[in-house]
Image (cartoon, rainbow, N blue to C red):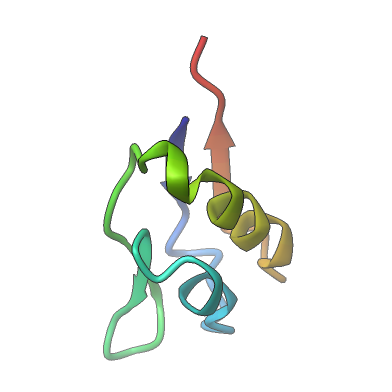
Length: 65
């Protein structure tokens, strides 16, 4: 899976960092920071949950073939 974030859509709710802190962080301004665009298999469930919980739909998941 490849993860993409749109920092312009991010409203700074921080759900992604609460759910998947190994993949997402927040800048000093509260905007999402992507730490790992290709997270390990062990993190995929948390990454999917983070994308589902994002109130701004700033996280896009691209399933790898």
